[in-house]
Amino acid sequence: MRQDHPSTHLRSQLGLLPDAERRVAEVLLSGAGVAIHESVGRLAARAGASPATVVRLSRRLGYEGFAA
Image: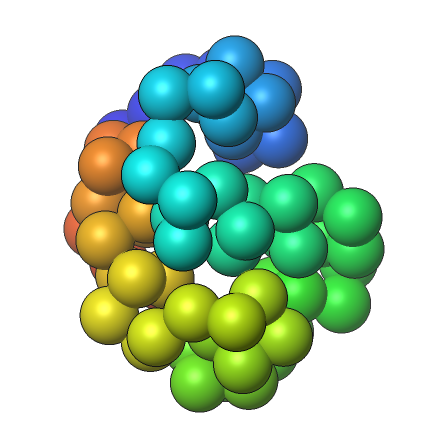
């Protein structure tokens, strides 16, 4: 499990992410208070990505997945 704040870690990784994962990250950073309560499908749709991309991003950042 990550020890630093999720948004800090996410910002530090933005430039390293594939395009679809970066779009998900940007949606998360622009409205984390809302995004963390969304389903994977809704978050993916807002980012123009697939639900699998949301899960991949979560795992890339060191989390087990994305739960809403």
